[in-house]
Length: 582
Image (cartoon, rainbow, N blue to C red; front, side, top):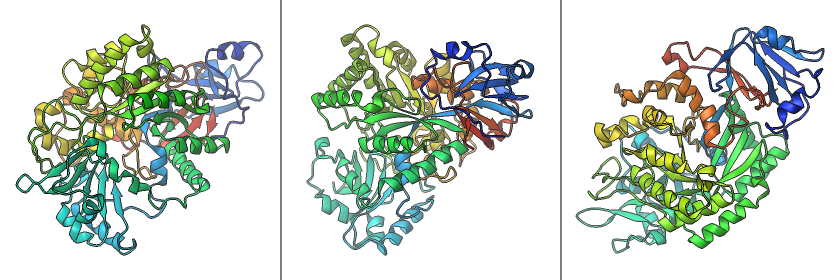
């Protein structure tokens, strides 16, 4: 195929486009694509043969004959040769900057066992000066064949002369030197305000086991030693990641926890012409802020230049963390987690952690809604979900009628539901982004811990769709660049296969097969539905007149090939605004 030569038209709005497209009867499209198997993913999920592109928008769809008849002397005519075309993938939840920068210092090997983890720590003791921190991020214990954290004693042997920790989400396992450096002893109290959150203890001795829940006090060590990284280096890495996203068909990605410096980096890359995905930003808001400080922060985000809607880069939302992690043992559940060697839980009554008060949630949601920003919450456990929905319902009564519903409060992850959750979600107009990679990568370990009855509420796609809950697909990609090495895996076709098969790795068990959805629904989940939950459905998510010409060409028809072949799908070409990237 050929790269489309076109004028930049990124500022055109969908509302104005039809008039602009057809104001001149002699206007011809820049390019026509014909003789294809085009999945429009419109309301009727129509298949067509062809479509036309004018500037960066879809100008017409129809038969090959109809579309070819629109061509002018300068129109490029591109024969799709029967290949399948669909809208570009929208990844509704990722952390691109951390992913892009993670291995700037050194490559982090793949780890599948406790011994792999300890071997990594041992290797770093020969590089890092004695007394300095050695850290490891996001090696989830649900993805270790041992199905547990390393113990404090094991880490002491591997790292005797350095403070060290392994962080997974908000939770960490530390060695003895790290505990001493932080001043954590048998007599230390559990005070969330201190940054320690909850200190796990040996039931007999009450000595800290090395496990901390909600570890804000150690989070700053993760970025230690990165001051030498220039913005040019960061831009190069981020551009490389954007190209990797394009290679698997991603044309829009939502950064669900962007800092001010992250936004400056995206802006610089955009100004250089290197931003090859449309990026929707959710500005971080710390859970340590008071309600008054939260309101001040959100008001400040609304005034940022990036908050002005732009086709390539838009900060249209804000994000807070409500509870902990499902993969780490700190998500807030309605029922106790139960004592667990997998998660290092010693208290039989422990239900997980909430980071926010009701007043923080209400002030955050209200201020965001009044500024037309979408409030989003990291919310994994069903206890957190119940708490959140009740608080948002109270907020709706404090705002003008329909104001909260209009901004579509976001539930990030929403992995564990409860009976009737869908009614409460719909009542407040909330939306949910879900990551199928967790079902595939972690489903076997989650089942071992929670059992069949509780796992019925895990990622129940069929029930959510039947109850018309707006959900969108994403990855929660947070570390490493290459698709095959990424944490978490961001290949959308593995995600599509996962929601169809519900077959986790490392087991022959199918997780709640009654929650499978159709192929059409799975495609919508990563395109049209994701556009809706990101509040950009007027411009993206389907191949319809007036929407951006963001589309991908596949090596197979994913509606007709064997289901197990879907995960092998390769993207042959990726277009953004009619411009070929891959």
